[in-house]
Amino acid sequence: MLLHHARRATRTAPDGSLVPLAQQDRGRWDTTSIAEGVEILQAALARDRLGEFQAQAAIAALHADAPTAEETDWVQIVEWYDELARLTDSPVVRLNRAVAVGEADGPRAGLAALAALDGALPRHTAVAAYLHERDGDLATAARLYAEAARKAPNLAERDHLTRQAARLNTRRSR
Image (tube, rainbow, N blue to C red; front, side):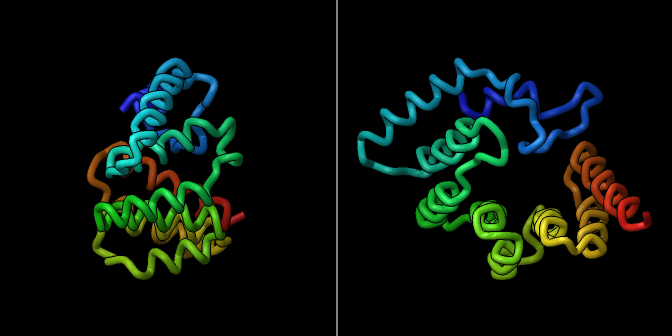
């Protein structure tokens, strides 16, 4: 929880809009909370009794440890998602793993991982949009962002996805 809380101030812009992890100002993250969270995680992992919460914390620590989004150790994050999936068999974990695979091995690998999941899974369409955008298929990505916006569970997420669709549609029309 400390590792997630350390990013709290950067998750939304002053107007309340969502700020994706890759765009958050890492200089504003609470480094004291990150250090404390990593220390607690290391002590828990040293007990050699891996559980769901330790695996989740390890993923959060890898995000928090990266000086920039581009320096995130996505390969190791995929490995932790594999452990977490083994422990929980959660569809949400497998969805998040598909994103990590897309970052580690490229968007087509992420789309292949995503194809194995139920399309009715919450945020499946948003993940598909993101991966298609990374793959350069802007028309499909824009359509999927708009579809994901219609399915969004809250206003902030809906607005974010709508802006993503509009951004791509504007880019495509130039």
